[in-house]
Image (tube, rainbow, N blue to C red):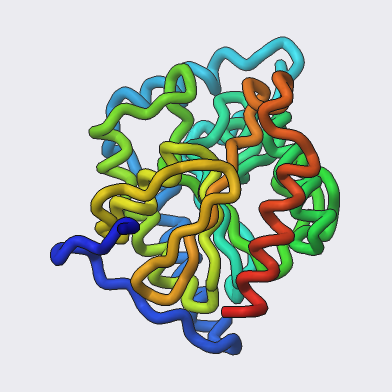
Length: 246
């Protein structure tokens, strides 16, 4: 038997028809401002400050964002991509999720090949990249030490992700990059037991959406061959199929 919602799971809306962009855009803007101003996790506040004040040699002279990073993309997204957290010298530097690091290079290139992005690269927040039918966010919005937020930090940030999932009413598929992103979404939906994580694993959710799992495009996975470009492409091909059949 697959995972089932707990009786106490948070209520999420049934995905709606497209055409709701103006109110959705306003709600997303308000949420982005709230995320960027958040300071509820002292360890993360201190870490992102330290990183911003001590940039890598390659980025010396650049002004780091150094704050929580909101999600970005198409307010009418059919697909939501959920990562773990901003990279210290990637999104924490540029201010945009999966921008300015090798994980972002992999993710955006795959989304471009699938028709979800207007450019194959994601270099800076003002590089002209736009997402089409997709939204990118994360389980945690601050860069954590050693790329690992602790349970208290993940819990503190879960409210932001829950609200994003509620606001993005057109989304049919939630792609989770890695085990921790999968756990974050599963907890929001109250799935017990948590669904088994595996690359391309699919789990139906209570609001008619589908949870689609992918390995995270981290260097640990891409350099070792655990995640290849064809494997990444298969995720977004499947996501497109699920959106069309949903």
